[in-house]
Amino acid sequence: KALLHLERVADRGATADFIASGALKTGCLRLDDAAQALALIAALLASRLDAHLDAGLTAAAGILDAYGAVIARARGASPYAPAPGVDLSQEQRTARCNACYDEFVRIHAAPSAL
Figure 1 (tube, rainbow, N blue to C red):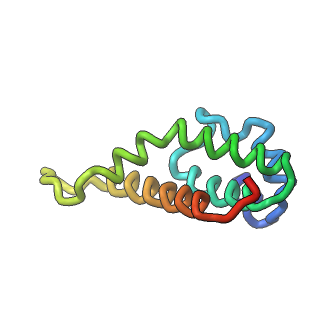
Figure 2: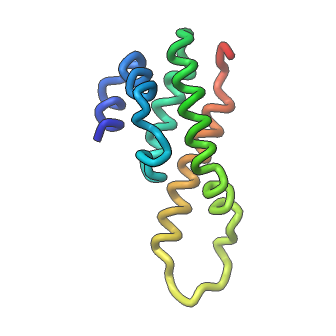
């Protein structure tokens, strides 16, 4: 809910404060929230304020540390691998991982003052 609210408010200062408070610690953030958080982080990284950049970089690094291996594994798995049935949770996890990957690519491609 907090991420949705921050997205609607679109206040980089509030987002930076939220991140700096430790709200995105790996134990508190689920994979399905990570892509949404990364979209907010991308906005912080577009800022010229050091506090925003620091919060954004710290949060992006934390998400990458927590979920980088999961994202890489999910993206590397073959969608054509034989399976005895439909694995909906795997499909959902792959979709979430792809969303995170897309956000990381967008962050990486964005011009910044870094």
